[in-house]
Length: 299
Figure 1 (cartoon, rainbow, N blue to C red):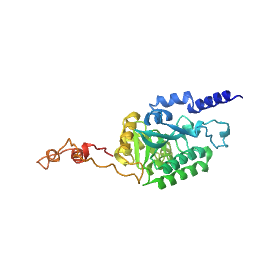
Figure 2 (cartoon, one colour):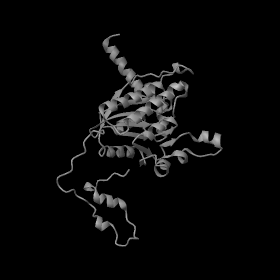
Figure 3 (cartoon, rainbow, N blue to C red):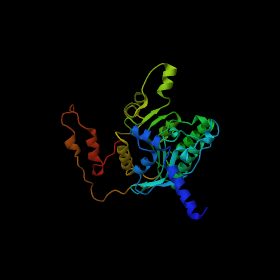
Figure 4 (cartoon, rainbow, N blue to C red):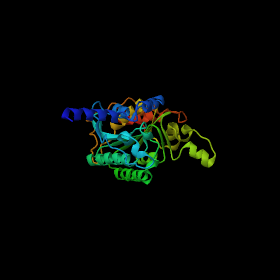
């Protein structure tokens, strides 16, 4: 094989690996109103800033005929990029590949990019769309979760950890996000629960939908597990970009210097609070009257 043929073969393999679970699986993802894992990364990061790692990683499963299955990237995309020029490490689970299930190699890709984020002292962003552990790989998959949880705890207070829930995530798939600093959810797309409706029906005899059990509104308005709620994936990504403009890269990063000139404020506190103490008012306007340039991001 000539060098040009090898290059052509490499490009072919890259195209195949970039297609995830194939056209049929992608169409199924789109039918649910969801973007693919690769589309999500490209939508969030600055144009042409994404540098992918470990595209050709293969799964390690051999039992249950797993050795006969091709799982591109083992169901997760990892790499580095920038958001408004802000360096980040990122991973996105690919639901079109084995339901985004976590196997040994899948977990190793995630822990590798988490380690890289700690080395660079930059935020780590995880886009979660996974059915949980890949049962065909048994305890190896569960051990992978342990490796991720350990890194969550080691990164806590050192670098920002951001989780984006963009699918039906159950069990181990949501334990890691619960350990991170900020959790984003999207209406009718995000679900977080320890175990799904099917198991609850079997064990307790109660019927409940995924949305009522752990949908975006439940997590944002009742449990408090989610810090940001969006109506679409696009809105969610804009929220993440806004958050990134407020937080430091790491615990050693210096705060932005205060402006020398007095900041402009759109709201005057003494004009917001009514004379009648029984009359209601929006406390957000009080905050905007205090913060610089009335710039306020509610969490």
